[in-house]
Image (tube, rainbow, N blue to C red):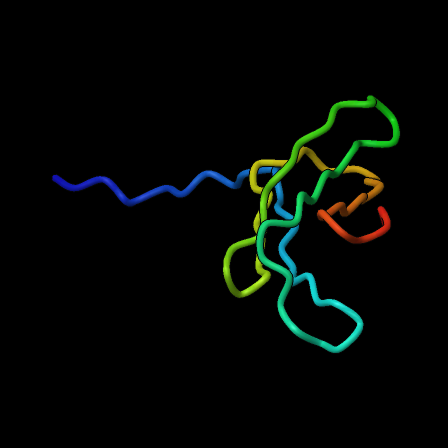
Length: 75
């Protein structure tokens, strides 16, 4: 007797990316903040030494993104 494996689908997603400066160099330590437009719920991450970030487990929806780093204008 055996049962088949069932895999549940997760309705959440993630936003990943890389933050670069004007000279295309990685920007480590930048704060990336995403805000769900409909609910106002926000989540954030800090970029690693390669300028990369991941913000996981986000409900489906429209998000605004803000990036800030010392010495740079908020984008």
